[in-house]
Image 1 (tube, rainbow, N blue to C red):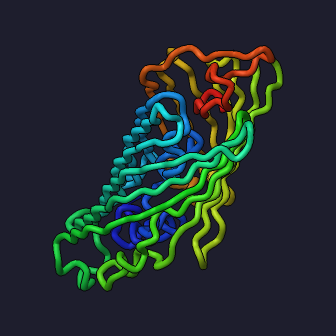
Image 2 (image 1 turned 45 degrees about the vertical axis):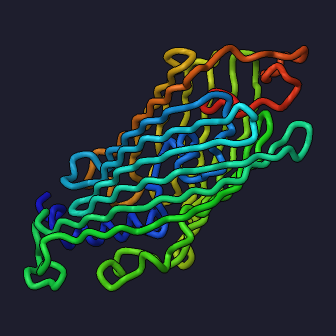
Length: 325
């Protein structure tokens, strides 16, 4: 429908999307958030056994011109001392005339809080490049003052922090992607952002149903002052440590199907499809999301006398996402 290509539609659509992913945060929305924890919580960096490279692509609202498209590259490098880690995130997010590129470097430090539990502290610093090209799209209001300039370009610094508490079969995390919300509030883009930090809460637990079947429920909550809570719930079944099947629900937004396969010991591929449960379902053919993870230098895990997976050193094992905890 041509009306969906108007600037007015994209302004309204952008405001709806940024209700939960405003420019006060750096991370676009993912259905497979359980495989992208490092993108919005720097404390996750370094909590895995081996270095990881994560690539993700999200195509939202298929069949709608100018709909959101997101590409992510993430790198997670744990140190050999099992206490520190470094991470890198580069994300490109397109929505109609708006393009935003995020990048940051993360650092984490872990402490042992019990025999089987660790607490990780993380910080990240980087920036966001915002570009608005007013020459894109069809405009209903020709004399809109914003259209007097052809493009708008701006750089915004970002500083975030997070906590990540985990054990062998569960995890819980809290993060704030960007504390510098005042730095990104100005007259040009004030109608597009919220001048307050966003809080992300995440958690998950793995139930060993049998030797060849694991059940993993998880959740992600996004809170931004003055806006409704954005709640995501998901369930995944891991079959024979190779195939993952699951579903998720984003309250008042979408229901999703998820699937994944461990192609090799060092490669994981995941896919999800979203179907909108709100009024947008009449105007699009759903959303697709792909993820590909590479585990560098990954070797065999060691099992103890109780058949628990560990690192062979009598210490709680590092999280080996997405397959184990």
